[in-house]
Amino acid sequence: MPSLSTAFAENGAATLPLLTLGAAAGEPLFWRGGQSVTRGRFAAGVLQLAEQLPDKAYAINLCDDRLAFCTALAAAALRGIVTLLPPSSGAAGLAALRLAYPDSIVLSDTPGSEYCVPQTAPETEILVLPEILADRAIAIVFTSGSTGQSQPHLKTWRALYQAGALIGQRLLAEFGRTQIVATVPLQHMYGLETTALLPLAAGHATFCGRPVFPDDVRAALASVPAPRILVTAPVHIRALLNAGTRLPPLAGIVSATAPLPPELAAQAEQAYATEVREIYGCTEAGSIASRRTVAGPRWRLLDAMHLDHEGGQTRVIGAHLPAPVPLHDLLEVDGDGFHLLGRASDLLKVGGRRASLADLTRTLLSIPGVIDGIVFQPESNDGNDILQRPAALVVAPDLSESAIMTALAQLIDPVFLPRPLRKLDALPRNAVGKLPRAVLERLLAET
Amino acid sequence: MTQEELDLAHLLINALNLEGKDPATIDPVAPLFGDYGTGWGLDSIDALEIALAIQQRYGIELRADDELSRNAFSSLQELARFVAQPRAQQAS
Image 1 (cartoon, chains in turn cyan, green):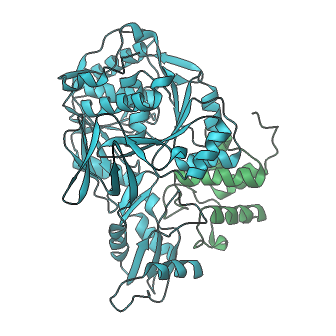
Image 2 (cartoon, helix red, strand yellow; image 1 turned 120 degrees about the vertical axis):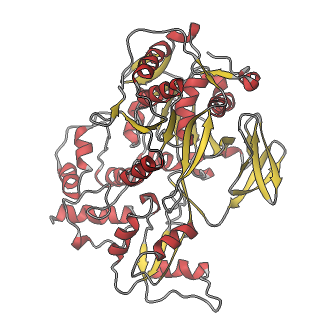
Image 3 (tube, chains in turn yellow, green; image 1 turned 45 degrees about the vertical axis):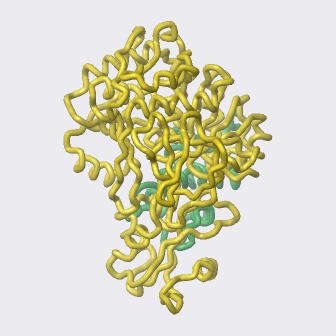
């Protein structure tokens, strides 16, 4: 496999491999239906697509299939086309993206789309692919502004490549080449790093599909050889445990997108006789730190990452990152690691997407007929706070709850739609106009 | 709405924290996913919750790679049909 130990020695290099081939060309890179696609066959597909892509500045990559996605990403990179990864596949978000990036083409693996990327690779193998300029932006990922204006973040090949190498080094080095099965999408940094970059930059192979239901996860894992790694999120781990799903032997479980409750991690470790490790990261910096959840709350920074403070804010610095990245969480540095003290109270995370509660409240108040209202995050929904959907209290005498939800659904990403949304005659504002949290919680429980 | 559809509507409303929704006003053929205006406006996280709730209530495993399961997610009516269907022992 590509040498992991030398990955960082290449940090100053002007170019980096798109994919290490040579003697490794015959090794599997993707798995589908029990069959593998080798690195060499994947490379042949990349070259083929690179020759066919039209001349555009940007390619919006909507592929769900991991082989099709990586083929499109790599072919675009070879051609100098910047890949855009939209935060949601909703029609409104896509239309906005096309408006902002008119010189773009949509690459998808759905037949009938603007440009359909095949979910197959040629039978022939090639042994060499050109290298990629390390500091050229090859992708743009977006943080989903809750009010629709997404913030773009440029990713150089160096940043992406090293992210794959770093995660591989930290979490998978002891297992050799692993087979990764992931329940998370590719258009999100965590899914991109674990299922596109661990394969391209660190020698691992990945299952093409995205199983979500417990029995699909079991079947996907059973279809690939050991050592198997399950890359997932707390909601999916909870679903597997609740469903009592039995899985083939696992080398490890990796979780991210939301904090994993330690009890859940302990249950999963016991049920699947493996270690559960979490990745901490953000869209701007990618993966930053990891921990084995049951070993305690301390996060250990990935190699080559460190933290500093400026103007009361913690920033993460990585040799592969073009600039320091300010973090949204409050944390306390502890040697080569840190403890999370909490999240900026305005920040909401659902399904790996971020929004500001203040923005969501502003959007709610912008709906004609809404007189007063607040979007907030209840302390805990029936004892588990994995999902963290927001709730809302609204004063709108002339609108029904469903009319407000319909209006809101046009304005915000559906994962942020309040559950529940309750109508009241008035909000219990105190003397200074504030809404005490305890009162909000009580009202939500009562109505 | 049939009794089975009504039972299922209650199951979904509880599992997905949708108390604002009145089961009596639900159109059984409205789409479960996507557009909030014409349907339930559910998302992929809900799909997982629904699959779990159905497994726990009816002992049936939903699978995304199975045509019948996929079709079941199109509406409350289809979901009720899927759940009511006699089936062979689930392969494991």
